Amino acid sequence: MKVVIIEDETAAALNLKSILRQVAPSVEVVAELESVAESVEWFETHASPDLVLMDIHLADGESFRIFDRVSVTAPVVFTTAYDQYALEAFRVNSIDYLLKPIKEEDVRRALDKLRRLSELDRNRYSERVERMAARANEQQQAFLVRMRDKLIPLRREDIAYCHTSAERVSACTLDGKTYPLDKPLEVLQTLLPPGEFFRANRQFIIARRAVNDISVWFGSRLSVRLCVETPERIIISKARVPEFKRWLTAVHPVD
Image 1 (cartoon, one colour):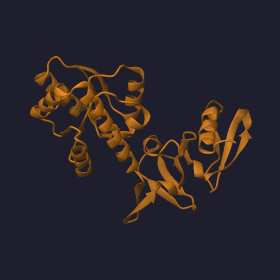
Image 2 (cartoon, one colour):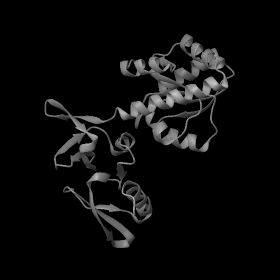
Image 3 (cartoon, one colour):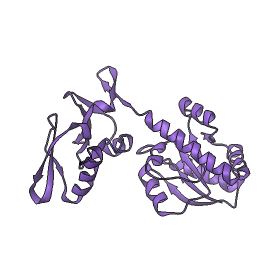
Image 4 (cartoon, helix red, strand yellow):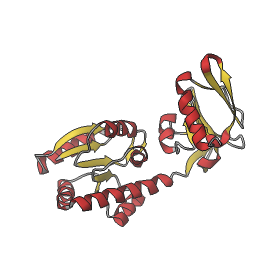
């Protein structure tokens, strides 16, 4: 049995591998992945394993985001610290999970369950995982931002752009208000729907609804002006112009 482990905590990954050696010596761990981005790249370039052990919380976002970008056809067993929402979702959808700290008997139970699945059962199981991941991704409708002594929900549909400067990240809304964010742009990129938001460059993620007009800039680059003021000019590099145009035309189809 070929297994992929997706876990960003080194100690947790080592513990899981040690337990696998104890309960199923024939298991081969073919990859150890630490992030959403790394996992997407691996699944795009490798054959499907027999099983995926996947932590929910990764360094660059929720692992559910993996399913937005790539098809995972192998059965998935999630690993998590106590998370009431996630556990209820697993139970309702009959998706297997391992609660941290992971014990040998838990892993043995999960492997036994997998061995009993027929090909049809595996397909149905994978479909349930994908549906659950899709619903989980839809839950990220807002971010909690701290303003003095309060936590304020910032709805993603209100965001005009996210910007980083001097290691500080902020979001500006369509009405021109600015809020501090505690996540880097790399993580925000995984949490914001790619059809609605575009990573313009290292400094900006922009919302399609905020794009006002576009000008040709020096060196075949593009300059994007939004409906709100920005702290600096938003430039799309020459290499990314085709991708940006595809994104815009997908949002606003050309007649």
